[in-house]
Image 1 (cartoon, one colour):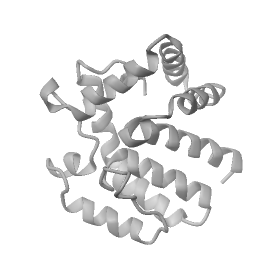
Image 2 (image 1 turned 90 degrees about the horizontal axis):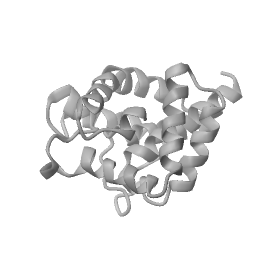
Image 3 (image 1 turned 120 degrees about the horizontal axis):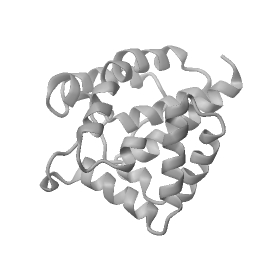
Length: 179
């Protein structure tokens, strides 16, 4: 695959991982803004172009990044706030957390030299953000095309649309609808 395309894919995956993993989101304000600028130079379509512009505008506003982190908490973390979007493939496949698919995912990534650092990383391997981070690693390492393909075909593609639909249906989602 074209190296430029792979670099863009790695940026997209890192962008999504950084926005879907609370442990990464903190301290990433400058990086996310830089990624937005880079991604906006070649949007995939008109909808992406519009979303990048909205996100860029909102994040440039005073307290913009704090709005994003607050929305992250409201959408993905705080069950007392009402409906929460669960960014876990187990939730979408089996209706529970830490389901059998988590074991399958762990088997898939077992072949990779990347692991979750449990001391600083709190999410399980079936978290969309974690898988996006693994995808970025696979692209950058250039050695794991079979793992990339399996992660995309078996875990991301079958469930990401339902995840996106839950975000769009959630009344607390504003900026994350653009993500």
